[in-house]
Length: 252
View 1: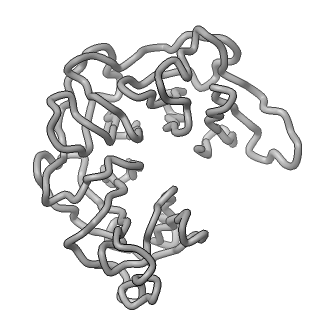
View 2 (view 1 turned 120 degrees about the horizontal axis):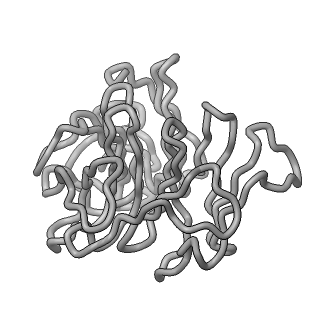
């Protein structure tokens, strides 16, 4: 889900109902959404995937929803059975979109997943308003990136940074020595991490910074949030059943 701090709203994908629901920022208890995007015109759930991820652009009033081999873009103010504003899809776009993030400051759309050429998974960078069979401007992928999973992706527009989830088998945690020493290292072989790149990076580029890695504590990352005021990064982890906060002044 995403929080719209400009309009004080919470936007939530609902895979069972194949819908996008918007709630008041102060919603509490059993409260109905103020808007629901749902119905056959939306194309939500029209692929093999049901909507379970989204990215929000409160500046340009848009919601981006990855659906297997395409991305649907809706007006964030839309309500009911409405068609997308535009669709990013085609043989030159990508084979599968695993995650999506938007940077309205630098006007780019970030997609994690499998590229159209069948090469290794990674991060594809598009124009924010790309539609149809638009090729990515740049791709970050290759063995140095460790982006084998093509998982969740997040943006920090103020610095033009990309934060992407990956799985590491060779790198070590460069942020937290305490996490390196955690006994949870014995729990699993695969280590999750959040890598940081620039929106201007291209090709087989290692992350500029990394949280987690083969000796870190992250296992199954589910969410990332930045706190610029306190210069920290918060990561939710499904298998740890926890939200972990790291001091990370380098990126702010």
